[in-house]
Length: 159
Image (spheres, rainbow, N blue to C red):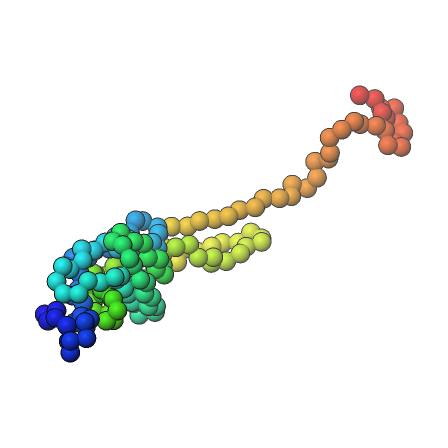
């Protein structure tokens, strides 16, 4: 790789060398991905790195300045992750971190039920969360003192 000054202008315009190693990790039930890398010591130095995550329905990229940075991805997809160095010369050639990086699905509101009903769990669903609010009970009366409230009879107002 050429690293000398081109046309004697005092700047190095050679392409940035890709990181020598890169990896990505996530824990269960999160869309946060931690990207770690080892910068190359060949050629011009990168001032930051661009991580790109793409799948069939979404693509996102983020600029990282330190190894171990976290990127937030969309849930429920398998991504191809790449990493490339960048500096004043532009973005260098990317390396592939993973072709099959899977982000777990997160909870999605499926329905709201306000009466008795049956819910059938779709195939492939392995977790279910429910938010339940109970009310009613049909009375029961309030606390406090008891008085005859205008009731007449042999036991009215007696405790």
